[in-house]
Every structure is written in structure tokens, then in C-alpha cells.
Amino acid sequence: MHRSVRLAAIAAIVAASLQAAPAQAATTYEAENATISQGVAESNHAGYSGTGFVNYDNTTGSYVEFAVDAATAGPATLTFRYANGTTTNRPMAVAVNGTTTTRDFPGTGAWTTWQEATLTTTLNAGTNTVRATATTANGGPNLDRLVVGAPSAGTPVQANGQLKVCGVKLCNAQGKQIQLRGMSSHGLQWYYQCLNTASLDALANDWKADVLRISMYIQEDGYETNPRLFTDRVHNLIEQATARGMYAIVDWHMLSPGDPNYNLSRAKTFFTEIAQRHNGKNNLLYEIANEPNGVSWSTVRSYANQLIPVIRQYDPETPILVGTRAWSSLGVSDGASETEIINNPVNADNIMYTFHFYAASHGSEYLDTLSRAADRLPIFVTEFGTQTASGDGSNNFTRSQQYLDLMAQKKISWVNWNFSDDFRSGAVFTEGTCPNGPFAGTSRLKPAGVWIRDRVRTPDDF
Ligand code: GCU
Image (tube, rainbow, N blue to C red; front, side, top):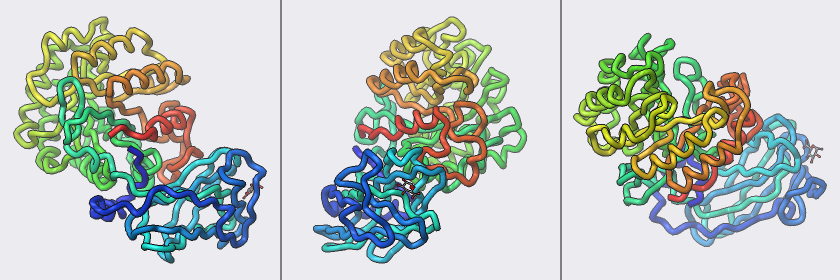
């Protein structure tokens, strides 16, 4: 299905109107045919639809107004296609029958690069006015068209509800096998400022992510230094994801020391509170051990066998994701393989095993392992990068695409590392983007960010 805007503010309206008849099928209104005030229709930048686009005068108040017909009253999506060849956002006030919402129109990289900005609104039966007015002295972007459509079936969580492991796949509440795609945060002790209203709106509405992984480190100045602070950060981010209709992975990001048992009693405390507080939600996954290392599979398994029953006392339904040997490589980085798990699985239902890879470090041996393992075990790729295992260095997009093709084919859910402005190549935003953005569009993305945003945005098959 095609998903569109999921602004928290309108989620309730969309939810309430899901049973209502859609306002109308998609209709295109070319900007050059609309009412133009302080702007001109031009055609000197390629890639537009119709006969051209509107070049807004570089002044506050310049506008394009569309007369939009709706057969019936109800919710609708407004998708503006535009180009902004500058690096400066050109926000516009979008007034629907006089009620205004301000929308970002960030730089698209070139005047010939056209992108879409969507919002959801409610239309009256009959003719409606939709006016997009420049709010800064730079004027609006070049505006190609407005497409008015029926709203989508809603957010990922509205479409899928409570998840459940079904055989070796992840299924939605209707029993359909699905693939989730989204982003991992960086460590909450370092990059919490990259997880604010604007960035999470962008993740849900512009990136169209299905899932946010909340990466809470235990060591390295993380949870162990202040359990209250970090648990509260996780509570907050769970609520933020929930408000936007996204799934959330609560990632117990143990890494060093590599034996998960070192943090077992902390994990029991943390997950008990999380499960008690959130067991009524239908949009969570619990990842209980990010990357065990330096220990055998039986040691990891023993940890899982002790922690999972504690969580299950309070939360019988949330799928639990279990890390695997050697940095969640299914053992490959220790010269082992998925066979040790198949022969000695964790003693619990509704669980998946995690696999992590970094495409510039992990070649065909890892790809083949993932392919084989996914036919025998429920696998969730809770972390991967297009670069080397440090999350830095040059990208290998060719290898990354091979992984993505495999994961699409086998419906393996994936989460990319990471949604922050760290200096490393695997952090999607350029340094200094947080906390002010802009987070939507591509103007502040590094190459890995541009690449992965496109792939997160690809419509879901829900
Ligand atoms: C350039 C560009 C125009 C654009 C204008 C602007 O002149 O060619 O298409 O509208 O910049 O900054 O608005």
C-alpha cells in the first residue's frame, strides 16, 4: 500500500475516518493552470509534469491557489511536487478553505530534482481552495503540481496491529507475512538530541519508516550510569513512535563486555518496568541483547532463557529478538554458523534471532548465511550499515543492494544504523543537523542517508 502523512495531530482524524468512504480517487492539478499571485509559469528546468511549473516570486506572500473538487466530504492527502535548487528550506503555509498548516519544502539538490511533500487534510464536498503561500522572503520553491488523493489505510501500526512470529516469518494481526523497514537511533547517551518532534515527524512522514529502533547502551556512559534517566528516555521514545503509528524496537544495547549475563540483573530490572508500563501497546519489539561477543551460543542462550520468562510475566505478546553469537553474526564472525542455534534454540515462543551486517566488511559468506538461516529460523536484521563494521568508511551500495534484494524476497525485516548526525559515514545526517534540522528531504543527508531514505520510503506490501 502507499502510505502518506502520519502527523500525530491528524492521526486521530484518520483513525476515526477509516470506515468512511474515501473523498475521491487521486486527481492531479498542475500548478501552471492554477491561480498564481506573484509568480510565473515557466518550463526552463526539466522533469516537470504538464507544461511547466510555477516559479514563485522571491517574496513573502507569493502563492499558488488550486480549486480542488471533492465528490464527498472526508479526509484526503495533498501531495505537492516541487524543486528547490537552494540549500535553504522554503516553508509554505498551506491553507485548505482558509485553515492553515505550515509545511517545509527543503532543498532538493537541484532545480531539476523534483520531490514530493505530503500532508493530510479534510475536504468539503464540492469545490475547495488549497492555497500554498511563501512564508519567507525567498518565496516558494518551484511548484510542479498538486495531487489530491484518498488517504492511505493509515500508519504501519494501524495497518498491521499486534505482530506475531509465524513459523520463520513475522506476521501481522491478520496473519499476513510482512517486512518492516526503518532506522535505528544512535546511542541515547550521545544523540538523544537527534530524536525530537521534527526529526521523528520526518522519520514517519518523509522517510515513511515502519519502525524506530531505540538504541540504549548499557555501558559507555549509558544505562548503568543513570538507570532512571535512560529508562525515562526509552519510555518517551516509545510514546513518540506510538503517536506516529510506528513500531518501536526497545534495544538493550549491550556491547562491551560482550557476555550478556554481565548485565542480566540490570536487564531484568529494565525490561520489567518497560513491560509493565507498555504491555497494553501493540507496536513493540524487545531486543534483549544487541551484540553478544567473545562468548559461546550456549552462554547467550542461557541469558535469553533466564530473561524471557521475566518479561513474559508482564507481557505475553510482544515479540522478543535475541542477539546471536559474535556481534549478532549468527556466529559467522567466530567461524561458526546458524547450525548451533538450529540445534539448540532458545526455549521460548514468539521470538526471532538477530543478524547484523556491514556491507563493506561482510561479503558473500555473510549473505549466504543470512539466506540459509532465514529458511530455518525467524530472523530480524535489527542493525546493518552500507559501510564497514565501524559504521564508518566508504559505502558498498552494490553489496548493500544484494542484501536488500534478499531481504525483500524472504520478507526479512530490517533496520539501518543510524539516525543521527555523528561524523561517521553511517550516520545519515551531516554533522550539526541536530537538533534544528531540517530533517525532511535530502539536503542534510550524507550519501548513505540519501541511499537508505529512498529504500525506507519504498511502499510497503502490507
Ligand atoms: C533560479 C531558478 C528558478 C528559481 C529561482 C529561485 O533563478 O532558475 O527556477 O525559481 O532560482 O530562487 O526561486
